[in-house]
Length: 305
Image (cartoon, rainbow, N blue to C red; front, side):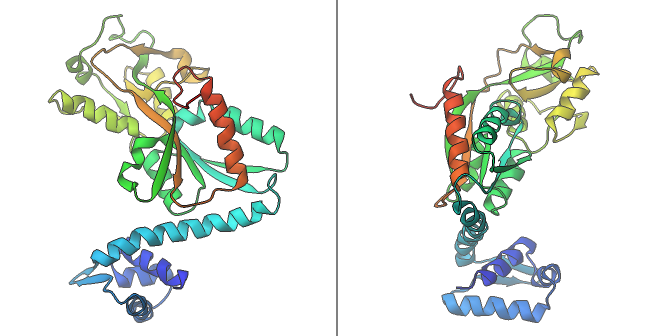
């Protein structure tokens, strides 16, 4: 099976239309159709159901689609792995990380790795979990550090390892009218004006909190998928936000206070996400070992001793 055919198939699934997929690929529609037909002939199954305005994967196409994503991702990762395997202390690794890890243990772990392996190269991609998982599945990153439950919808493609249990808190600026020391109810939180992240695990928690109390989640006054930006906005206004708790250090944190609400139960597990059946580069192994060691010293670590 030609990996190029799998990539053409994946691009067709992405567009849901052979003509637009062909245009994106810089080839003619008949040429793409011919490649897809050859793939179906080789596998002896129908992969695409033709619709009046496009195509959709058949039962067999859905199965192949999942495996094709994994194959393509592992192929991309293999190229980097082969390069780094020439010297386990050299090479390049690419990891994705969410807000908690970027503002928590990851900087210390990368600093230790860089100090111990001067020839190592590390690229860190910051982002929200949904985007990072897409990068992981496409092979653009080797590992992701983030909430492990975000991988639930990709259980057949991603495996996880929980390292730390975190919680989530409502934050307002110091001197905010609602910040009077009293425990807030969900109804009182619903009356606040909000800055909220988009596409994050924290946002999912936020919506579920109100759903659990049969309330509509407040519509945010501001929506931004950069947590640091939302904290800066909150520090300068009477808006509130929700964020994963990390050790505050400088910047907007100096002007923020936690707004207590005992009705919120927001524990979550965060850790390492990787593609199933993939071999990660040696430098990734070294980085995760450092992180696991650091996590053991964390007060809410889930790594077994």
